[in-house]
Image (cartoon, rainbow, N blue to C red; front, side):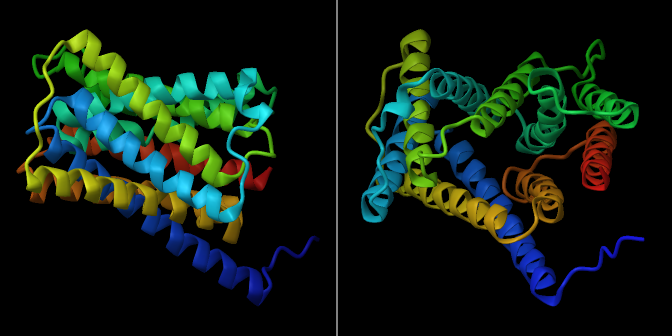
Length: 296
């Protein structure tokens, strides 16, 4: 019988990694809150451009400090182009969902990203996924449908924006797995936030709304979104590099608690029973998939 007990050092690493993962999810949730607030005063495309530029500058400075090569030849390969495309799609539609739909429901739908990533890994990378995990994947997607409620009177077509954003992020995560190892974390951050700028410019051209001069408080809101976004990204990197992936990844779902909490407390949202039920299905399905993957 194989001894699966963790060493004290590994147990401490997993605990620390779990802390960083929760911190990352809290950072991303606060970022979403500030972006939603800024979009109430500025056109969504303008908010995305300001946010993307801020994050890209921070990661560019970080990359230069670490002497990471940003414009490496690998950065313009097919894999990175695909990753950037998915990043644009994910950021564009998710930011629109944050601006136009309840934050709590948008955050709940986003939790299906790991489920879609596992399905995509099986389809595109040939990873083995047994019938139990496929069943959990279908259950998780059913949970998303419960949140959306298509065909019901309460169905909001704008909620499809969150689904498109979630699919974009799942595609980005799959492409990241194939990203060239020569590109460091800060370099990937530069390209990721640059993609947000492109998405914002593209949406601004389509939307046609004139940009407005931000007031001091709005500038502060966008800068806070940048600060917490970068902090969340950095914490996520530390989490994945500190503990075992199978141990820290389940704590991604803590973002749901923060997202619903901010939606209720800051924006006065009142999630209904279907949102809570669908969220529970998505989270339980995701946790089961992760546990089965660890067992394999």
